[in-house]
Amino acid sequence: MRRLDFRSDTVTQPTPEMRAAMASAEVADDVLERDPTMDRLERRVAEMLGMEAALWVPTGCMANGIAMMVHLERGDRFLAPAAAHVLGSELGTAAWLAGGMPEALPWEAGPGKIAPLQVAKAIGNPGPYYVLKTKLLCLENTHNFAGGTCLNAREHRALVETAQARNLKIHLDGARIWHASATTGDSLADLAWGADTVSVCLSKGLGAPMGSVLSGSRDTIEKARRVRKMLGGGVRQGGVMAAAGLVALDYLPRIPEDHAKAQRLASGLRGMGFQVAEPETNILLVPVIDIPLSLQLMEDAGVRVLPVGSALRFITHRDLKADDIDEALIRIQPLFTQMLTTWEGNRPMV
Ligand SMILES: Cc1ncc(COP(=O)(O)O)c(C=O)c1O
Image 1 (cartoon, protein in one colour):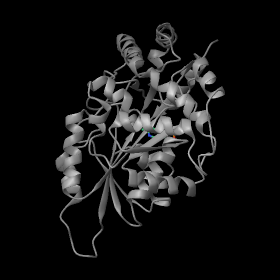
Image 2 (spheres, helix red, strand yellow; image 1 turned 45 degrees about the horizontal axis):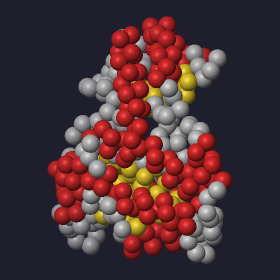
Image 3 (cartoon, protein in one colour; image 1 turned 180 degrees about the vertical axis):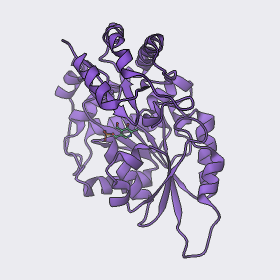
Image 4 (cartoon, protein in one colour; image 1 turned 135 degrees about the vertical axis):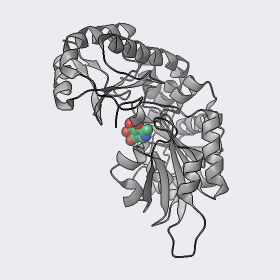
């Protein structure tokens, strides 16, 4: 039986165009000088985001880790929406490597979303030398574990302005900012507005085998380049990978196709009786009562998903065809009664 892989949008295979671009990439030692293909990719991403400069890194975790190391000093507090990737999914590197003291803000403005007033309250007023310093606001757009929910440019700007007014730095984990832009209709630059650093991923939804890009001011990116080297991320002829990243960016206009697949999946599952929120992007959370049992049933049916809290997470991507969605629905239909759903508010509990 052919497996239908909804575990992540990172499971995609590099396309023939990517492989060809990798094979013929012009490269040089990016530690000693600059690799021309990495340079081309970095310039392109910086321009798309309205930033001065950018730096290719192997992974999203490294991009976020470098940003935290650049912005934080030991013991500084940083704020992030609850269940943000930097809080719970990066093995504590924000604390371990960057020395940050995390504060998770509950989703008061909707799934995955925090409100400006909340940010202002969490920062509080400046105090004497013996109080904790809050130095950084981390945002995540789209918010993975909330089910791919988006901040639009207006919401993003209000949060950024609130933090800036209190002298915080802003890091945006924009691993799937492409998806937020496709849904909100706001430009990448508007969604990145005011951020001191933005990380984006080329390997999530776009199909590159690896690679993220951290953007910011020229000065910030020079610091980030040093930190990347400290972490062992000084990749020499990285243009081989950057070449795939450049091709991956060509997929951006097709992202709405993956959102349509998620919507089709959601409506099919709803038709069976599952309680599923309308997906804003390519991530769908399906609450179930018994996670281990449901995962086993799905695995046996050849539909691969991952658990997120009390839900199964489906992510649609370019390697799943529209027919694969119908096939998944056919396979899931007989399993429904054994996977009764749970529901809290308007979203599954995470
Ligand atoms: C929102 C978000 N940020 C960062 C990452 C980390 O990316 P990587 O797996 O490339 O380290 C992920 C991975 O799924 C993610 O979803």
